[in-house]
Image 1 (cartoon, rainbow, N blue to C red):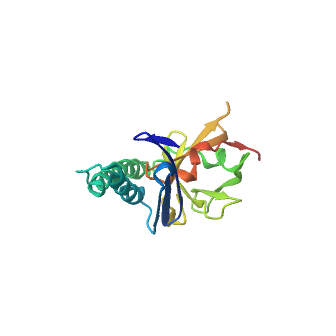
Image 2: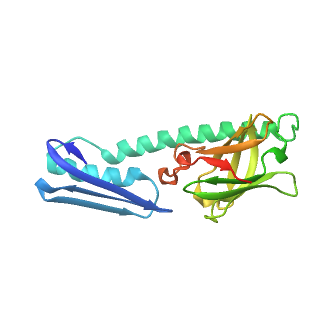
Length: 202
């Protein structure tokens, strides 16, 4: 809810993989705008909604499509740069056993009070894997990044949500928990990885 040019506005967005939408209501103007899209960029529904609102408010000279597209391209460029730096660091660590922690210190069962249990297991190739017991989509291979941080790459690449897994250690150097953070700033905000706090249970 917000004030827009002195008018009360209620708006809400929503989305699933491959689709995003926005509903905007300005009751005093008897105006309702609903934008449904079959793509994932919020720039589309914002450009359409604000172009319509400009017409109602008598605002001229704004090119909302260009403005939001320029912002989208800038954000994508920044996200690509961040992802490239992570990839570079991972490649540089490949095969360096002196840097990578011992997998046995990280394997086990971890639990978040809301999300449930996750298994961190050692695979035949010696690498770690991440497997959610509640959400089968959140299963993937882990690669060492730096310190106590790994990158998990989900088996379902269409999620576009590869993430950092940052372990905490006890005084013996054994992992006793971890948190998750998306690598790309463009990862769907609704995944809310950053709100999870896993603790070792086994």
